[in-house]
Length: 226
Image 1 (cartoon, rainbow, N blue to C red):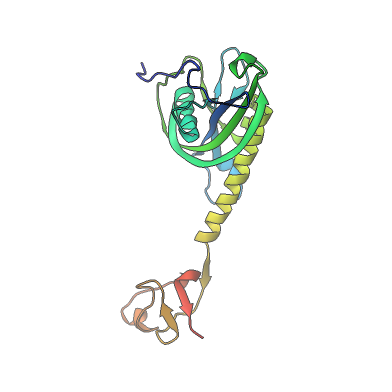
Image 2 (cartoon, rainbow, N blue to C red; image 1 turned 120 degrees about the vertical axis):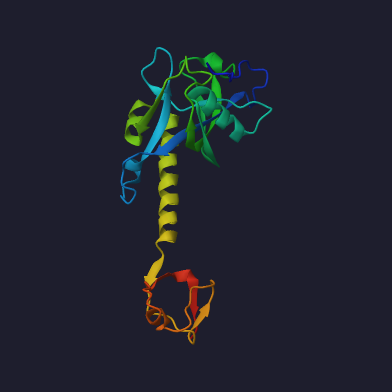
């Protein structure tokens, strides 16, 4: 049995203009067995969603932001309490949405309004037991499945932002790591060393010592002199 306890009550709940402030996250991981070189990023990502009693649709972990924690801490706490996961939180929000609770309006303010902040959480640990396990089952889903099963439209928009942001970051990452050019062997006379040990003392020295070099070098490693 888990020794962790979920927070209850609303004594510390934050409000803003009669809106209950909510923090949540989209937990994700890289799917096992998929080729990391494929161009289809969506097929490489799985997201974690949770169920609620007596409902067939799913939600992402979320809950009230309380006055003794940061909004990022609230998102991580809700992921732990509701889904039993820990991980690395991207502190840049996926977005902010104002919405009205359709099923239980008393769960928000008197007017039933909420203001929700969503983040992306890369899962690094899954617990076997967690505080709200009896109320929430968890399921790893493809992005496509998550869109189909998501309960709220605003959560679908958060999922869209998650995927768009991830694709942009992924593209920038691979552009940086693949920024290589094919170049003839540099010589000491026409190449200034920017990074230590990247230039050899003579264009034929590698051959003299019986070594094989590939002259694929990072663009930013050399600054060739005119």
